[in-house]
Length: 404
Image (cartoon, rainbow, N blue to C red):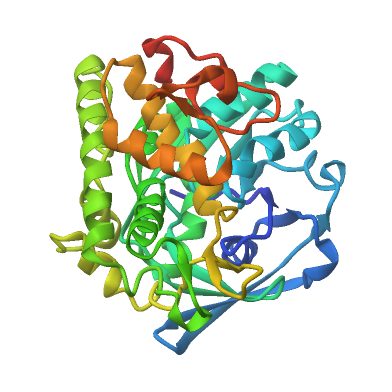
């Protein structure tokens, strides 16, 4: 497909690891890149992305930020594409901030996220389209981040360890997929990396496929069961992935098994919808990485890129290290992961005792009440100061409303 010569203005929202990759890739492809961040002064005008194999820099990409600001009014109205690079639990707040400044005079404004956990379609419909009465919004969500990446120097240099073999993306309306490929998707993987084509999925497939939303809670629960979530020194803290053990793998498998019960009922209820990318953990691993792994442990312990990641901990008053219950593994993957699965299961009258067990463990640590007596506590979940992503938070109360 021949790319249009009209320059696309793309605004990145947030300064996460993926922003350090997107900015150089998009700028090199001809996008006018804007950046909305709380720390605009910490960003260089030119951002570099190093492509690494192991510790070796194979090549570099660089691109300029045309405009950066902490104020949505400065960078959002011109945007043809808006991409969130934030923790999942911050998506809705960000959407509320930018919604009043989305340009209604454009034929379409594409609003998406580089990581599609928690049904981004529900969020945009509720926080943007209905709230601002907009009819020109195209929503998209990439199933999982198309590459393994990290920040080397904030606002200046990112590292990309290579792209995934195949990526998934959900788009609404669905017939905008080809246009999105032309103006955005090919620029973030195929063009710069020569790998990582995109296949079209539906939003509920991305919601019920499993990646971080079972991986992170499974590992944290396993660490808690084995060590009590506390270590004498930082040196005693296990690596999150490199030291992944059979206990954590078994927990992950049990969570995935309950997700699979929900996936099968959804497929049976909506046989006309394309759910080929509603995948289990190992199925998703095989798709993204062209992996032949048949066990969970080898997918995690053998990853050179993930191997250096430590378990998130904080120092306690006694000098020991405690599992950090304020990290995104708890803020994203419980209220915007397991809790959504629990809520959908209840809508289908499916019992999920192990998902419930993990949520109850996490909420007890944090003083929350997402679940009471084994059931979703809607009074708490829908409270004014509570952040969670169950369907009812968006006014979805019927099974048919789960699908776009």
